[in-house]
Image (tube, rainbow, N blue to C red):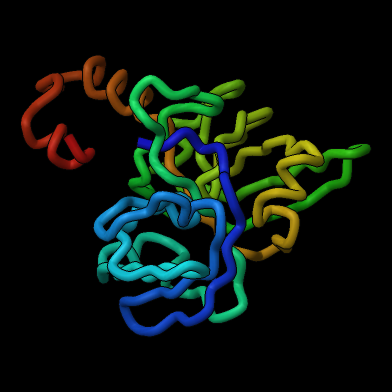
Length: 206
């Protein structure tokens, strides 16, 4: 489980079919083989590491569902280690299970911050509520406004400087993960729903 508070921006050294090598520093402290790291919000398993980089394998389903299939050497990615039990939850509960991707539709300066507009499909927007949480490339953000096919967030200067949103451009593809609480509420309340089932829990990583 993650919090959506990016610990470091890493740089992709190589991006081959099904494998990424990423240069990093902070997230490598105390790392072990088999550890989890969220890369642009996608939970991946460390397969190799040294003092300045780590490697992860990326499954075909992850490549299809996330923006990891289109990144290349030199790109920057958001990195976060899992939250320790009892640790501070500075953002919101993020599973590292990306629900889909979105394109940046607009970036508007607003003083020291910026407002970013993201196009999103219906399967994402059904869970988007104003003042609710959403994970964008692994960053915990609050939805300031929503329409039928878009949502907007305000990005403060600190987030712009210390995540990859500072280099994002209109048209870029980002990973989205909706708030898991919204999925649970839908499952409980939808007409004819069966409640929380074993299949539902398995699908969402429990």
